[in-house]
Length: 165
Image (cartoon, rainbow, N blue to C red; front, top):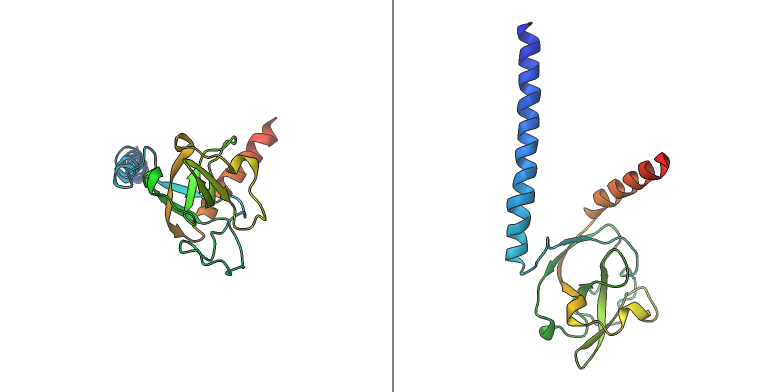
């Protein structure tokens, strides 16, 4: 066999091995470690897929994310104890939908939380009576724009999937 061809094959195999090892590191070390650090039972990163937290209304004096959270932002979530949450905190919770919801707490009554998207004029039914078992975590950081990569990949996957049917 040609020496140049063997060198090319060797480089390709090394490249494949590198990416496989990197993927394994992220999946089995980085993700579990980040979940442990952020007191979560899952990876503490979520992508904002809707505009319900976007706004230009800064009249309310929200301490957390007073300028809202935009579609395509990635958020970092910490497993703050449910009992420590307060009105104005932005949380992630599971509703009757496939994807978790990212909204702001507008009311706490006994042990039930009501949220509302900053862009919404009222709370929907799925945002009311949020119990501890539906709560995922409190938003502690926002990384602008980086979530657009995931949204684009998901949209491409859906397009390919729908094209095959």
